[in-house]
Length: 145
Image (cartoon, rainbow, N blue to C red; front, side):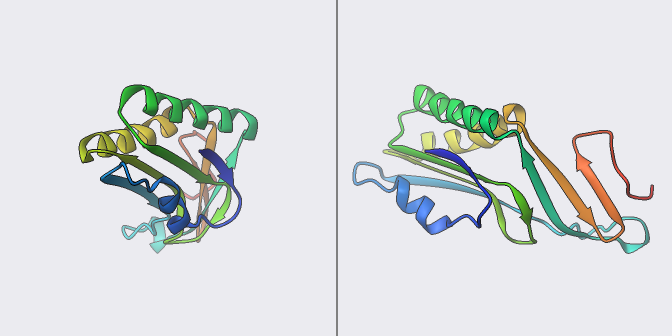
């Protein structure tokens, strides 16, 4: 299952969703909001992230990635959930859980999924700093340079 949510991601439920008796491996990737320890100019820090999505296309692309995983590896189940809206430090913004009879395909499929999400899913991330914000991956920003 692949989906977007504006609510906190229930990581335990996602893992339970891919747990199967015929699979001996579950690989889970959890992307969380990181406070940039290096800081910005004048000690600025990331306070939170905000994600915006073109929902219809993003859902379709997440489902496309799920299908790619099933086509390329022997998997039991796949769950991909991405947040939209505000995500505070240490909160998950994306969770990918993959089960497989063997660990290799589970690891490989999980890695492939996060790389493809960044490559093809229309979800945009805004880093909100103590002194402004930056749209990551774009040329637009309002933080002092």
